[in-house]
Image (cartoon, rainbow over all chains, first blue to last red; front, side, top):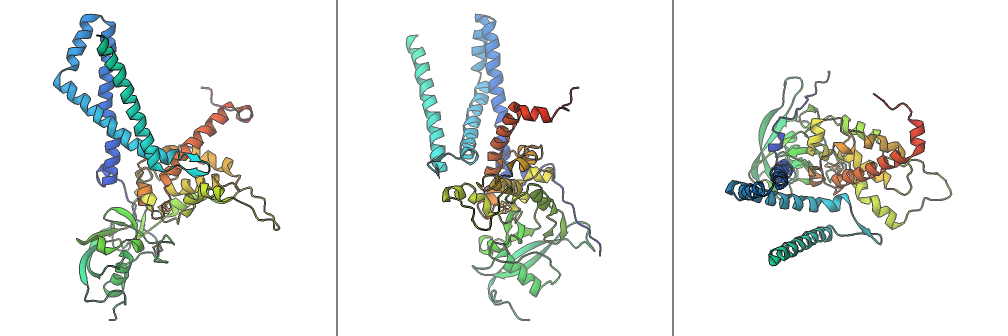
Length: 133
Length: 261
Ligand code: SF4
Ligand code: FES
């Protein structure tokens, strides 16, 4: 008897078919609100180079509810992406100390500690700016 | 008819829907439901045995060890790749769907053709290379040296990770999780000197760089191999390899025919 193997094909919506794939696509989709955030920043830089009126216009533009909502979404998206990235990092770069691999949970905690430190440093810097005003 | 000892008939039942593909009569797979008796210890593989013995002797599937070590009983259970002998009906009280492993051609019912995977595996030379064999002296390895690769050596070639990988599904030329994990395992082995022979394939576009770290391969692996970790550690190795080649004058001498257009 001759063979007749059935060749399966991937449907275009394969990424909707399993929770693991949906999670993966959500992780990849975090780039979309971040693109908007980067666009906003570049727009601000451009306005800054165009003089004070233009800069104040940008500040107003940034305070519109829909812009604030999209940028809040970008913040959430980047935190979610950081969460997934920090979890993957120990898999990609296991740190070895004295012949032992550092527990993944330590590395994840260390990365969040780094985030906290950067956040506090920014808080302090910006707070100082406001204080001197 | 005699019941198999493991499943007396007074047990509770659930509905197991099994994918059938009979090449002599079907053009595409079809689903067929069976009411199977089960208790706490009934595995998917036990249930398939029961169907084959009691209901339908034409059902085709693979198995051997029935203890999660031979790697032959891989199937999709409700869309997730699993070992039939390590998956229990008690965890699916509402019934379950059992299909052939995804991303491989189906030969018959639950039997797939895994040649593509085996082809990739052999291409990456998963064995010790350049090891001086001396009959008088064993090759010594410290426990630390063993630990570096041990996790990646636990692979049983079940192919579940290939069924979990959308990149392999979209591009069967992708060398894939288990083959790359095993290449990484030998590259990490202190007794091996074959890295230079494996690296060209790993560096190629169907090597480590085809992986987008979906990570599902590591989730489904029944042996905790974590092939996604191996592949993405392999990206670092591949990058270092590229940097070394870039600065190596010897390499420039041996590749004079760079396209200049
Ligand atoms: S890496 Fe895990 S899932 Fe993949 S073939 Fe090996 S044992 Fe199976
Ligand atoms: S029968 Fe051997 S792994 Fe399941």
